[in-house]
Image 1 (cartoon, helix red, strand yellow):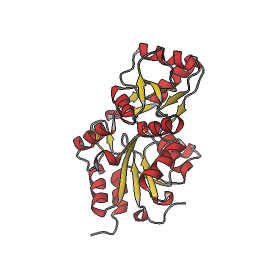
Image 2: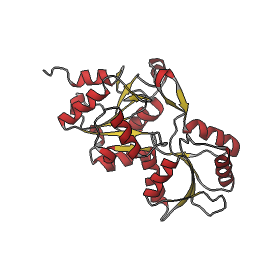
Image 3: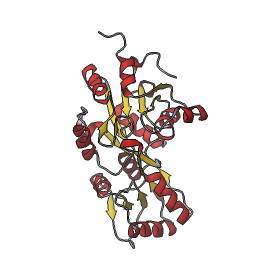
Image 4: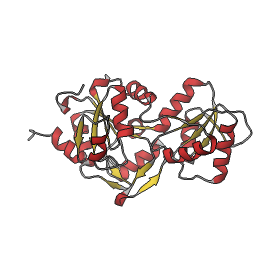
Length: 271
């Protein structure tokens, strides 16, 4: 159930691409909204399903956008959720990753062994939003999957929105290609997987009915909140449209054109 007043929310989980920024361009109101929450002492985190970069790189990204942040501790990526899931299943896991060098370094930093050897015994194969994708990596991935190794994927997003109404092919679309080749569907982690809500609750230590997810996608951001009992705040600055919302059974509890309008609502009545 929604809080009666948005100012009663104790923690905001912000999506990034399409919500706070489009590529290298901050969305109007993003800087001011985060500065407002900092000044009010309201807990907030930045959660991106984009696994192509590490939390350290996202800190640099936010800094380049002039958006205040709390450093690495304020960043959550689908890579974090994926690492947590893998470590919960296997002690000292070894995996093959079809992903960026940044994702591999992030997983290694979580004490997960990453191999490039196509003939090693491994526990999982993992597909990320691989902006460094090549055919050799795909062949190794599909061979492992065909041999029965469990198939994980960091995020379900089909596209990643950028400036000018354009987009990049994301992990969900790559996964469909691999599924067509192997007839095996991956277990998606990141938003909207249950493991994501568990990760958020553990990291924040705040009751779920006081946590809001702010995002631009029904099937990731809003569905995560809906399934996990969190508050959902939708923005129309990225992928989601009013037409899509009207046709969907899952709808945001609050809807704004952008984070600028959300800021206006939070500051209503303030001098």
